Image (cartoon, rainbow, N blue to C red):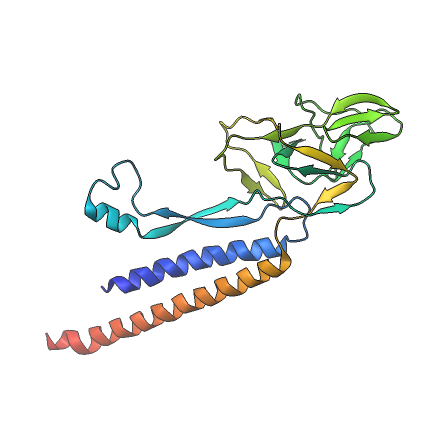
Amino acid sequence: MDSGYYAAMTGLIARTQALDAAAANLANAQTPGYRAEREFFRSVLLGPDSTDSQLGQTVNNYGLLGGDQLSMTQGTLQETGNPLDLAILGQGFFQIQTANGPRFTRDGSMQRSQKGLLVTDANEPVLSSTGQPISIPPGDVSVGADGVISVAGGAVATVGVFAFPPGTQLTAEGANRYVAPRNAKSVVSTDASIRAGSLEGANQDVIQGTMDLIVMQRQAEMMQKALTVFHTEFNKFASEDLPRV
């Protein structure tokens, strides 16, 4: 079978997956704290012995779509005036406690619950830098750039901003919360600051997202047309040329 058929099939699968990612990015362009997903490619051959031979080096130059990974670029900040709306500047995530365990998010839409805890819009506790729920007594609240929460001028807790070692891939759960790998250990971020009264938007530009979606769709259509051409040629070969052999 013509190798071009396999190349076109691989291209169609890759562009279809990229099209799904582009559509999800565009759909969440207005979601606070959303991290856009970008496709990445890997080599056909993996492992330390993949380039030991000239053939292996040649084949390994042919890339396959390895999947999607989160973009950690900074999103734009929007002022809200709510002192408990928090935006992260730099690398890191807020940690929240859910029914399914700890989760991480850049969505800083927070409020004080009836029990006096700092919680998300879904009433899930936001954790401090020591990994504990944050209790906020009544009074005027302010949050410093270092995450320290003060009530009536007195510090009560520090909002945790956690980071992971380079190369750690978080898994998206819903629109703007993420699950860390089982063996990954988070640490308090040292290069992040907090801006109170603001929310970080998605790090996906609407115009760029629209262009990406159009490009991916056209590339997928091209691969589909190429498959149709190969399929037609195979049918012709099977019906006309093979009987003559």
